[in-house]
Length: 338
Ligand code: KG4
Ligand code: ZN
Image (cartoon, rainbow, N blue to C red; front, side, top):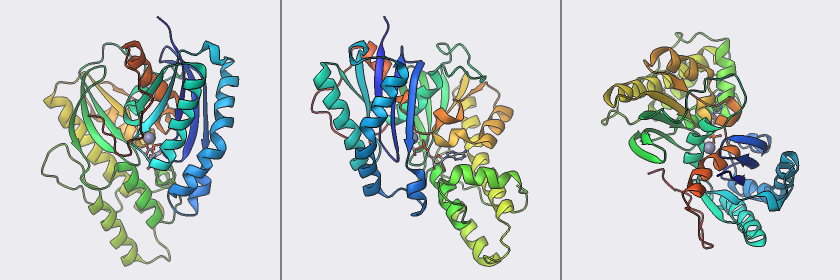
């Protein structure tokens, strides 16, 4: 069986569409980012985001179809992110997908954004990154860390998720974003901190690694407060931005790596899988690979951050299992993975 899926992703501030074959082969992957537009607010401004999606969605879909060199008739299904995310943003993608599916008489596949991030690891990007025998990787421990979500998940098979723990306050990406704002490094904060940290001393400041009651939960708000207090104490003049960025990055990475490794041991995982925007972080990728006793897999950076290719990768498995969505598919802003 082969399948050709047009996928749409508008959960946050990227308007994205992709055409993917068999859940892994990327024929096209178009992402129109609004990051610059939101930079002046220091984060995503929801109403601005949904209105931008309204403007961009059709041109982005056309571009994805043209770049893949396929017609509507070649498609087997339309996949779309229906949660989690911003309601107004999700609505634009879901309605566009419904319109196309109805008009072309194609099945509709409402898809979980977090499952998309995980399945980005199954996309054949044709890039030189570790691609093990991806059907024989279970059980694995997945660290799903993005701007809106951070959790540790045990996967015993495809689509089988057990949540071991999650953040009790800020998501890991949110911590990067908030600390970047304190250091006036701009938005999105993750890439900005990573860049600033390259010229910084990670041992300059000892920042807290929070203890949580449950071993696999995360907490980052104490770290954010520690950085806030540091900036107040040192003053904005001559703030050692690079050293603070490096010290904060190493603290976040250390927490993520330690908890993941603990889970790998307890559940005898064969692999570690990284997913979500934070998985693009060079230091996280390197530290996890160095410290985990198991192979660590992660998508190339551009497939870690929001894109539509990953949505088709996750949707393809549901399509093959005959699991399609009804016409009353709704957006679910707080949709969970499990
Ligand atoms: O998955 P994603 O694109 O959107 C959400 O679903 O939230 O993740 C975005 C998050 C942002 O918080 C951003 O700062 C973070 O991922 N991020 C990074 C890096 N690239 C993106 N964090 C650390 N290092 C990076 N290189
Ligand atoms: Zn995301």
